[in-house]
Image (cartoon, rainbow, N blue to C red; front, side, top):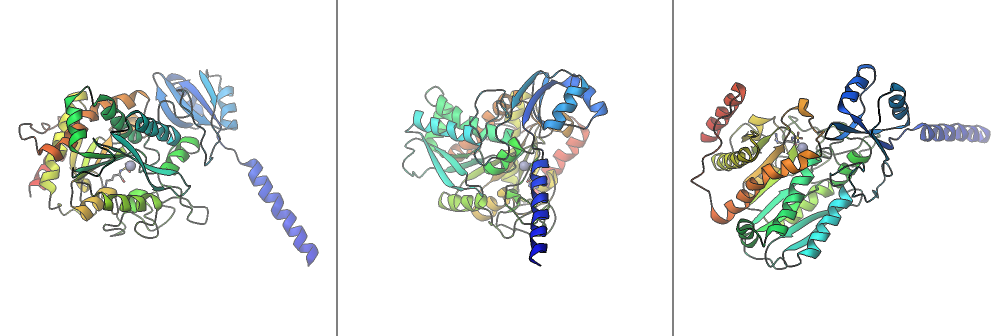
Length: 432
Ligand code: 0X9
Ligand code: ZN
């Protein structure tokens, strides 16, 4: 019996060791020209794309994939070793050419927020509102005049990166914080919003997921909750309390789903922290950044019934779309969330609107289509996405200080016929 046990243990040990040794983690970042990559794809499986820079594409590859690329004869234009893959303590990297290029990872974001706090002590304050499942800080930067005191000014809340793979959604809120602080003394418009409101910006709602997407699997979406049975992740944008689990349309009770809503409303530390923080600092308006799709969406998401303030939110969304269009010519379509995308429940904006009654928006940043890269955004897009959203963000904060800007028309109906239908659909829905 005892002998059998020993034998069994040895066999088990062998399998565990073998599996661990055999496991291949991607550990190298390589740059290949887009033309070469097209050639490569004709005969071999796709590689894990990180981002693109000019004509080059950057990929995260394991040892076998690297050998395949080398054997294919195409030119590897750049190569770096990725920081410790899967580590809970990501390596600090700030030079372009690291695994995330010009995109900010968790550490870089934290460093920049602290740097801003140090440079602008009267106007910026970093608040750690909780910790993620893997123990990372959930940070909000408060920007206001007399930042240390709680003034009776409207609270505007802006958040990014509920979804790990949506890297560009970190950049727009983060760069907005930086812009406000660096331009306060140069620009009266900036001064007006910083003096008149308390602006809370949280660039990363899901830091564990972001790091996993950066270092291990580019297309990761959820957080890193371990659900048992080798299944990880809750979709934090399905875990909020309002109408949580209303039905299985767009949210799922099954852990393996990409839209798993978690075991209970607010079961995740990442959503719990926001519940506490926003309850203590109720927002008059909020924006949650995502990508991709070029949409400006507002509640409800859980039902087709228009929200009581659908017209108000429709008008604000129109003003946001108009300002984006004036910067870049890009058309962001707008309407209630269900008409624009699909039904879902337990998302951030339904909760904010349901719990606080204040206008709440999801902005799906560019690109518009999968064929334009989808989640796989380029480095150049960081500056573009920020620039095209800046006037809209300033308008949004100012709206809660000055009220609606009656003189501005919303975006004229877009050209493409299906979008026209889409536009009128929303207009009608909003006017009901
Ligand atoms: O599904 C989401 O959470 C958001 N889209 S994404 O592709 N970035 O994942 C959109 C949320 C919009 N809300 C509803 N449709 N209810
Ligand atoms: Zn998203």
